[in-house]
Image (cartoon, rainbow over all chains, first blue to last red; front, side):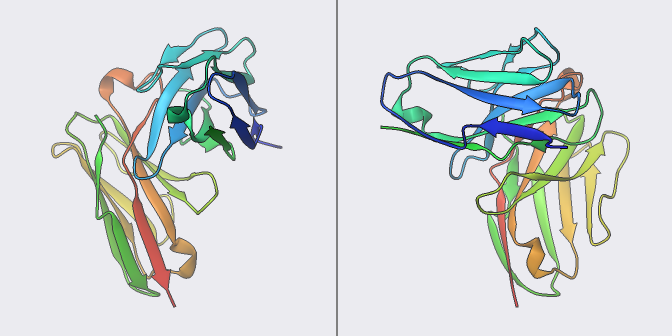
Length: 113
Length: 113
């Protein structure tokens, strides 16, 4: 049972390039989230999804897009990367409403130069 | 608005106790606590729901004061393995059906032999 898997684990992008981060979970969880973590700022919510085909904006959605075409996958896209998007990105999932705590993926460390 | 954690950092000797506080300016529905070791993903410790309190671990417990919009995490007889950064994550009544959390900035705990 893999839990929550994020790919890639590391990536270096040039300013203006695009990329997609993949989050896959095999626990049949309904809810999925993308957070970014920056030093001294904790985890900030980018986008989230409460079910297949649904997405919603979090605290810091600008510059990012998401899609949840399949229940097990939640994709985070950067259309035109900027140095301010240098961060560690974590995906998390939750079985559903009122159902315990998040299971996090191992993270993606992204550097934009 | 991000909950505020205090203290920002604490250093303990093995066997000593610690308290980490999480304070919100908004009404709370639930408070989650997570621990993150350096270079790893956050790991869920426990959840406290409005109207109740849940103890997740034997020597790690927490309280939730709904009126004061505060939660505290208690670590007793600390062990070296308790070292890491602790985050509280809060949800509001209006977002209880989404599972989304707003995280504090974190409290770094170092336990020395």
